Image (cartoon, rainbow, N blue to C red; front, top):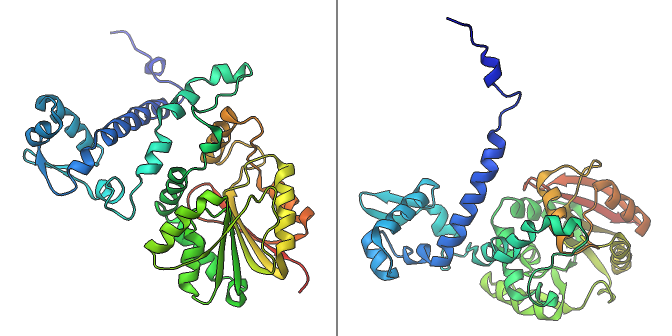
Length: 343
């Protein structure tokens, strides 16, 4: 018998990573379609058989059963005999009655327009800008802000961030807090809950006030809203703490201007907490930040995701002293804590 060299059948590296990318794409489409069909909402009140659901949806039960089995395989449903029920994951994030509902976030992330952006990378490389359909000014609409709120509440980074600010010496002495570009206002709301006498103000575009007040009512903690555009307008003065989270993804020159305004708005010795997805110096890590940088560039040639070094340099130029940097637990975000000199 001839000897077979099995090394000829063994690649130098596993291809499982590529296969997993393809499977993740399939799972994303499965989630998008079943969410649109309202399956999770139909099961919000309890388990149903494929036949019962098929009657409600006016679809073929034998085909629906295959779909429900697929959802059970990815832990979105639980199957017991011929009955299907939402998993805890689905009940928590995919049913509108839950306070942790992520419907707006899913609509944003899984939208066909966003998929088409990725599908046109070849056109983008040739010089086209792949903008999403609709009015560019509608990007920061209430649904978008709710999507950002849902993303905020979906991972442990929110609690880590709030605890980090609340545990800082600057927070203990603070009387006024400014949440710049705060939109939903969740960070300001949570911090005011911890310190009720804090004057917490969310500064954002005028039409964001509706969503800020919605979340303030939900959590029983009113916060002030100051309408304005931080790229053009001066900020409320005599602040003790400024929060600036996930807004500096535009031209560095614009970021520098805003940092200078923040410096003017803060009292001497006060603190800026700024949290963003920062790239490393190679601009190839962390993965989520790199993919985010590419997505932004597809639709906006002027977008820019900073490296940590770039942001630290801009802070210094604006007059801040960087005191610390902390990972906040969502695999890409880093908090930079900077102080305005004077005390």
